[in-house]
Length: 393
Ligand SMILES: *Cc1c(COP(=O)(O)O)cnc(C)c1O
Image 1 (tube, rainbow, N blue to C red):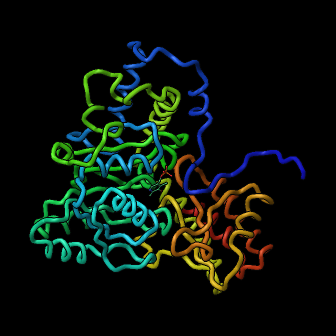
Image 2: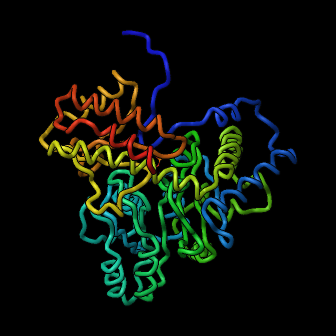
Image 3: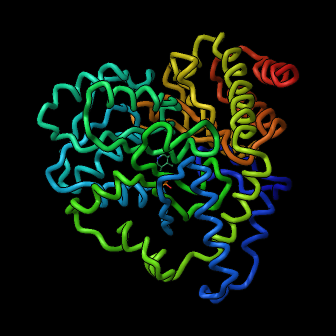
């Protein structure tokens, strides 16, 4: 095999590209974590994470874990065995979070839905209204489901809960959305927000978050699922060695400090605009490919299309794995295949975090070339449409 030179383009929807600055921030010795300097840095991270989640009244807990760990943390702190939860989303990540809840003896209620349309807030309101004895203790929603690439209208879900006059906690997985699209914990009445480091926040995998409202903290006082390592309250102790229930993941925290600096240098709003532009470029490109009558955007309604990742359906039984490996091994571009319902029938392009125009155009060009090599029908010129859009937007 030929030795390859140049960068690999990472366009999987997690992990995502890590800026050199963030990598360099980790290249330092371990430190005594009781020093004033380290504690000062830690405190500043909590303050800035609250700004990212847009919460003043809530609190943020940081775990040395991936997103699945923070999912579990959200469940075990807030719920008790036998509690019901409503999981209205049909995407793979909604289903996986629901399966995790079931493993803890929680009863999952779902709504009918498909993987190409977002959640219907009216159906959520109606379901909650019917729950007159308030057995449902939480509504679990995924902000951007990384399998379907659908964006959930969180304020509409909040309104649905309010319209039903239902006291359920509003739990949101914003792992694949945080830092890429608007998220407002306080304004949208989110009680528990689950985030991760390695998607929109340009971090190595390994840190995950629970942002928690006072209502969620109060619920945790009564919640009886066994917990110790994940326990929010233990980690809110005055004693700093309890903040991580043991040794803090120092190097990941050095990285996070640097990454948060980068987030605020750009400005959250500017990052949202950048993600919207790049995502639209991807969609314009797919719009051209789609004229070959084989490829289509998974999101049926354009306003539900996520800005951090795009799921592209491929009809006709083409070998998606061969196509993915062509992108990766011939063109050094990593994309992902379909998950859940669209496994074997879709591919996904991640465009979140540390990405810019040439990275997107380069990735799309490699994908277009690979479509050709693999004989997947498409109209040529998608990349041109993307760059033309970027030239004017
Ligand atoms: C990636 C992801 C997760 C899981 O995160 P891991 O770090 O892989 O455990 C959960 N939810 C969403 C929406 C994700 O994109």
